[in-house]
Image (tube, rainbow, N blue to C red):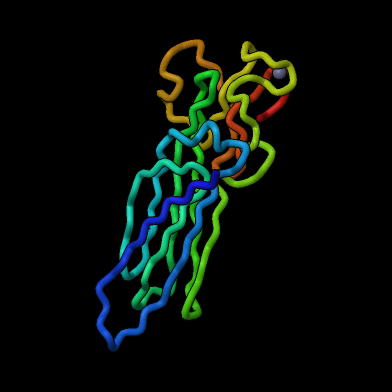
Length: 178
Ligand SMILES: [Zn+2]
């Protein structure tokens, strides 16, 4: 069964101002649908005409329709923590601009981005040795002096640049990021 949640954001317009329509579809990455179906996703859509900030649960896709007056560019930001069956958690983030240049425009987003790392549903459990014992988190950015906070916390440092397909865990036994 296909579930479709439709939210319509309408804006007051005068007869002399022709409107444009922007259709945005957010599809949940199929591999994560079962895990994410009860977990709220934060969606922000903003332009010169309006801004929408909402937290929704999406079964498999969400369709948003916006009536635009003057907006040329629409910024979409989506973020969500995902909790796996082993109680580990990952945070996914997406941001992109859509340019409106015709009377009707549309955008389609797969969230999280479709890549092998994001399709993995095993959480902190290493896909190779199937264990969590030697698995440590990967930390992005400059470590703050007090970041680990407590002695004995181990983490794998990574660069400051983040993509939509970054690994969250590192298995020391297998030298594997996932
Ligand atoms: Zn391993």
